[in-house]
Length: 349
Ligand SMILES: NC(=O)c1ccc[n+]([C@@H]2O[C@H](COP(=O)([O-])OP(=O)(O)OC[C@H]3O[C@@H](n4cnc5c(N)ncnc54)[C@H](OP(=O)(O)O)[C@@H]3O)[C@@H](O)[C@H]2O)c1
Image (cartoon, rainbow, N blue to C red; front, top):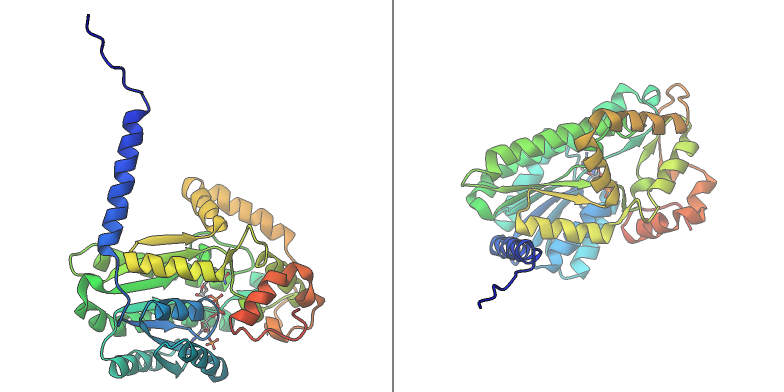
């Protein structure tokens, strides 16, 4: 009498999953870009995530170009990168200005002879109820967060296209480009524009045969220490208080060094999208399946935040005098601010 061997019902799906994971890893490895000798342009590489990205790309053998408006911060960043043995081209300029952004790209191509990767990272953030934001602030958000990326991308594109599929464009957007976060009207609007720009580039460049490959980065809150360079309006100290605390909670935020490693890995593999941190994953998922419920939820969060005061302009986090800066709850952000060239005030312990 013959007995048939019974196969376990979980064996086939497990084998299929294993084969799919193997094929995915092999595909990524094939696409992985060797950074040695490449030229990486990073907008706003003078501090925060941009500086960490410059270090990470540099450690992997790339030459980097960085830009920022504050010449002092840029100079410190340049010295720090050189001390790590990284070749740097640094230009102090306002990338919201088209001529300045184009000159930055042109001077990088002249200095290094090529451009392989463009990282659109420059950004500003203003935290205030919408009634306390003026048109000037909304305009500044569009200039620094959106137009800077448009100007540098269009100017760098001919250089990138010479490298074909080996070239990369990395757009650092935000979860604020998927879900409207309360008290960030100008920021959200500029990041929604940036999301449209990035996905349009993907449609027309990544999925054709010629490239470059485009990566859309969607970070949730990151512990970069940028709270001291963010602008606060309305009840400024109270706005700093909630935003500063939110930017320091470990589970809700991602360490900026880890974020930089993930962005560089995604760029090397030419991945289409990378979400950074639990908040980004959860909110993207919620907005994907129930957009209006997510908007309503954000409305409830808004009701918990400080009320509008009637527009008196904004103040930088580092220029505020508030005990929140020294709070133990901000410890992680304060450490990050010191590490990442964010010039925190003396009160930030
Ligand atoms: N930190 C977060 O929680 C978070 C979350 C989601 C997304 N993001 C995004 O991630 C990126 C980096 O954030 P971060 O926290 O590292 O910010 P950050 O520390 O404030 O750094 C921003 C960088 O952009 C530069 N920059 C801004 N506007 C510029 C302009 N018009 N021209 C030239 N340079 C300009 C700044 O230099 P100057 O000011 O000297 O010009 C600085 O180097 C931003 O796009 C941000 O929106 C951040």
